[in-house]
Amino acid sequence: MTSDTNGARPIRVLSIDGGGIRGIIPARILNELEHRAGKPVSALFDIMAGTSTGGILVLGLTKPSGDPRQPAHSAAEMMEFYRQLGPVIFSTSFRRRLTSLNGLIGSRYPDRTVEKVFANFFGDARLKDATTSVLIPSYELERHTPFFFRSTMAQKRPDYDFPMHVVARSTSAAPTYFPPERIPIPGTSDYHALIDGGVFANNPAACAYAETRVNYSNAADITLVSLGAGKSNPPVSFAKAEDWGVVQWARPILDTVLDGVSSTVEYQLRSLLPARPDGTDRYFRLQTRLNERNSSLDNATPENLEELRVQVDRLVEERSEEIDRICEALLP
Image (cartoon, rainbow, N blue to C red; front, top):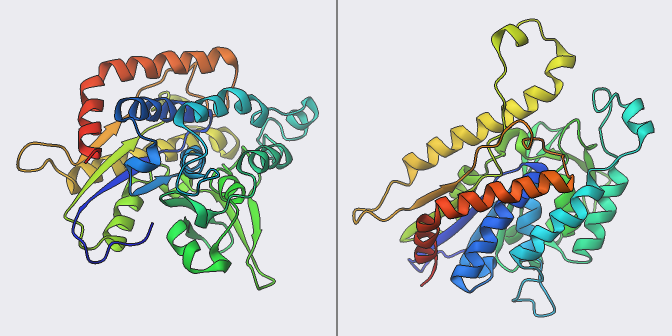
């Protein structure tokens, strides 16, 4: 997908939040969109952005098949990715739980397992091969700066073209859950040290909007669909947090940052993309609220996955008319 600098046409944008195993929630919504629209997700959007688990989803849905114009995976198959491979990714030995104090003094999960899963799933596919334009945020730890994987850039610069499995690992290296990812910079002895893009863009909708404005400067209009992975934060009382130190804040602060960033971006996008004069929507946000039982980023038990499925099925039913409006906005 190349930038549209001359033609003026509506541009369709998808944004998917981070959320670990809860990525099955946006995967289910996208499955519903594919079913109702009769097209693969990558054919419905001009730009697809995703952070962390959202980035994994975006890459899975734009990985090319034997026909480079067709995606290798449907949204239904990505739901199976979470069911089948989620328990593999979020598994660890008793020894590691003990030596890391369950993530307090070391990453909770080893990098070897997740790297093997991603390498097998994405194979030889590369960022430049994505079937539509993708934007995947990560964060450069040593340079203290956001880092964006862009398929449009990868098509122009071989040194910027990374394997999809490396991109997936980099965007989802959540602090305390997984170690950072170290990727060599081609042609140099230097490297990037990358962690989960959720530390600054767990909801990447604002990043996707900016990318659209840059790459499609003459776009007649923008429709942006933003999918959450469940609003997760259980309340933290003042009395409980008043005396917390580094150890007590280690996990709650990550959840607080992820949720706060997502809510802020939602407010910004509603302001930037108000309804059209005819009343039709430019911005859609589908999100569900979770309870303490199913809010964990790494609870990949069959029971929790089933509970998440029930939760998102309820959301699809309750927002069915809005999903129909989304399809109408995306289809020519």
